[in-house]
Amino acid sequence: MREAIDSFLNYLAVEKGYSENTTAAYRNDLAGLADFAKTEASKQGTEPSWANFSRQSMLSYLLDLKERGYVATTMARKVAAARSFFSFMVAEGAIKANPTENMSSPSVGKALPKPIPINKVRLLLEQPAKLSTSEAKRDRAMLELLYASGMRISELVALNLGDVNTEGNYFVRCLGKGRKERIIPIYEQIAMTVKKYVEEDRTKLAHSKKDEALFLNARGDRLTRQGFWQKLKEYAKSAGLDARVSPHTLRHSFATHMLGGGADLRSVQELLGHANISTTQVYTHLTTEHVRRTYDKSHPRANE
Image (cartoon, rainbow, N blue to C red):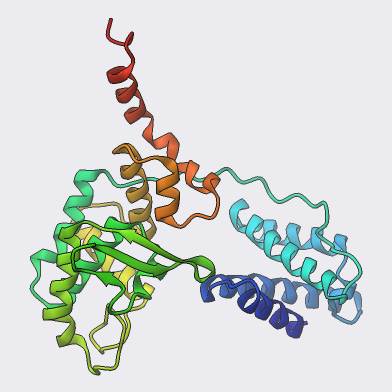
């Protein structure tokens, strides 16, 4: 059964261009599904196989997840993973029918982003400046760049030397989902912060001139998502912010503050690298105050 999962994951990575993080999430969800299928087959005295996994088996799996306390969002994700996997299996001729066909996912209310207020963002960005180490200078450049660009944390840590243009036409080049390249304009101040880090502090962290990673850890290796997230938690705590602040919180804040400052939805969609504008529209509810101010200021009858 695991061979079929490996084949599906290979399809996602090679043909669909899914990232390592996405395929890892699929692997985790489908491994749990395979374990459940084997347990059920053992109880029934049958051979565990995907061909024997029926619609009733899928319903039993959902009931098992619910009894184990999984929330609706996690259950919906696991159902989506199973649906994609079984669709692949049907297309490959490995099974005759998709056991998830016409099966609705658990109802999930869309979680609304909770951005950090602009004054609190400034406070957060000031925290690394209180330290004088090379790591702190790196962290300042990373925090500033994350908020300046709205990049995903996976995109940020994947940057190489040369991906941030610090000469005149300031921008950062990154690879998003499906390895789609996008160019994000940035302001001069952050470009100079990155340039200073590269010239003065990255050289102190680097152990090899051949390493192309922009952001390095103390061992001279590329800084990981987990490594940066830990640093962010420390800075958030010292700034008196909510402990749940994450790299994605800064991405939310970037989008919300851009829209609040007058940016149009299409531009923000392009900056974030969203394939569908419906994904970006989740932020529009956060800009109602800005819309009200603009309306009151602009409509010829609003101030009569």
